[in-house]
Length: 498
Ligand code: B12
Image (tube, rainbow, N blue to C red; front, top):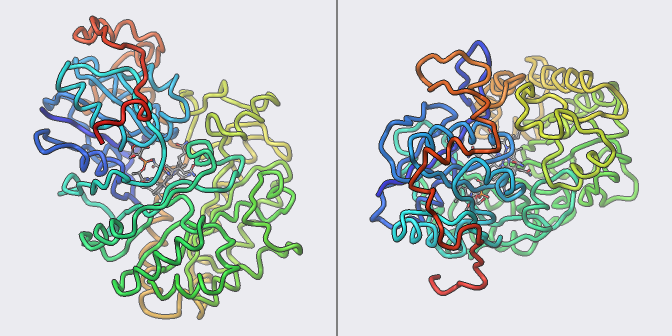
């Protein structure tokens, strides 16, 4: 029996064949493959840079879905279902908004797959069918002790960065973040022995802990760092700014090989930070543009990826432009200037919805006219188009050669040693190029392209019609599906197999 796993692309630009430049290994698919017994053949397509061969024979298709890739995921699912191949979906978007996702596939998994994947496979093997909804829990990564099967990455050219999980979730409740909705403000760490074993199996030169907030639990992170020191690896992750208040933690980060972290600065206006409930950014009473925190990060030589979000209620065009000037002055290694995005079922989404401020019928991720990095709501201090334009202007200023050269001239970070210099110069051009290639991209593929032969052209009415009666007729072997149909699988009740 063959299972095909797919990581969808976001979309495609009109005049180019969009290829994801900063492409990293899709860890969730390797985790699924790792949990799949050897009797199943597992194949993977990374739609971000290769064509999905819809005609290659397969028995079951699994697609990972984020809000950004939902439209493309539905297109891919439709193609397979028209060929009679059942499709199961999971991931962040499937968990945030299962009622939508289940309209476009045969079955969904909500939460972490670890607790239900064996059940999915058992059902499929035994009955040739799947339940509509496998409802899992969220918790520690790979808690069932499976190792990801990274063989599925073979012959695909990924960045030389090994993705691995230490923890999942975050204890903070920032109003815009999809993570707090998925993990319900909880954070879970993994058994250190398992982490160690997995790191030893990796061949990559740099490791990326894909934790949502690696310092959500300082003591757990210190333990991890102590364990990493003898391995002499180099690693990066994502963490909240409050890490800077613990000097022991900072020491250990450096000793363990941490090169830097993605840190959510979000805004340089304290009124915005309060509105969005960004607690870790409020450690100090006298808000001084994070000067103490930034100087601590520089003191330890960490190369920070500063993440900013633009379009809060107290933002104006000028205040946004001063944000990019601030980031250049601080000489951050990398930075993101993303427009605030209301993800479904987050507090931010609900607030904007109640205030009647959502654009694109409230479902920007499905709207045929929506384009990547465009504003999806009515901002208070400017028009939506102004927000779109000024955020792109930030990206342009940040990625200009003048900015790249200015930022490099920091003896405490990028010029500190050869490795840091190499990281700076190797990745700045990659991320810069990716920024521009994604800008204005439509979501999905079919709407905006004449068929070229690479994709089977289908009528959009069928493609995005929530009433999938057409498709159900074609997937006839699912028509007489009657066992426990519509029921959810509760790990708590049926725990026996793990
Ligand atoms: C690493 C990462 C990245 C990496 C990319 C990694 C890669 N492989 O390419 C980088 C830094 C490049 C990145 C980029 C972006 N990312 Co990102 N990223 C993450 C992060 C931190 C970890 C993802 C991960 O690998 N987790 C480990 C795996 C094992 O866990 P998992 O994905 O949750 O999978 C489990 C379950 O969800 C489920 N599952 C998942 N898929 C499937 C499929 C099936 C069939 C089944 C049964 C189960 C299942 O089972 C898995 C095992 O338990 C997540 C946060 C998160 N917690 O998800 C954000 C996250 C996914 N990213 C996000 C965003 C917004 C982006 C960007 C759009 C940012 C931007 N504006 O440019 C870009 C573009 C993404 C794209 N599609 O091109 C958002 C998505 C929000 C949403 N509602 O969808 C997240 C959730 C972060 C957040 N705080 O909101 N990202």
